[in-house]
Image: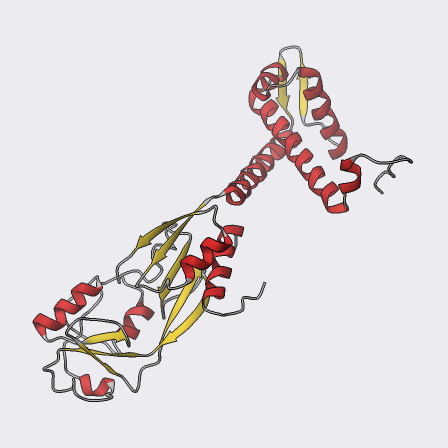
Length: 304
């Protein structure tokens, strides 16, 4: 139970104190004690450890002794020459270092003031403004990617969040579908199929389709091949797709409504829409704010 403030008034910290505040304070103190122990265990000398921690030696010795009392075991053998770790001390050193490294990662995420957004295509209408309103303190770095990686470098840690298009392999990722875009076949205006209001993938059988390189996500590649193995020139970027159609007469798929210059995009009746997706790996506060801003921009609801 927390102490009752003295009669006749209370200090500010007493009035603000809550059970959660006490637990957080306790955790911070325990992490500090573990840092003290790691310093002593690595230096194997209280004096050197105290200098490393910018402490005097007596409070450091008391903190380690209190830690041993709380754990009910001896962590250090003390002698005039210095200290040596006991078996329990070796175990705690390994565990403490892992715990402190994890705590440092959490602290870095909480303090992060930049976010790197991977983008495949232009889907940011309204999102940039929504995020700026939510987090005006944050610098946004944008990494544009080509068609060979629908996650925009998310799996390799090059971006914090991806604003991209599916479908692709979502294993190990968190995703939110922002909208669904119908797709069509990209054709030259003089193509016999270009004047049709709607076609199917069977109408394109036997034609060359532009292809993504080997190693590209199979789910992604299969979708943009119309669900079947195809052959044709290899491309990596949208402009390469456009030039492949213009120069080689090859075909491929694209979302409806995109401006591809003189090319024609004819709706495909037998293709499922391509989702515009936001994808991320870790639910740190800044990434979560970005996801919430995306949901706001697209008028969606994100469950906690």
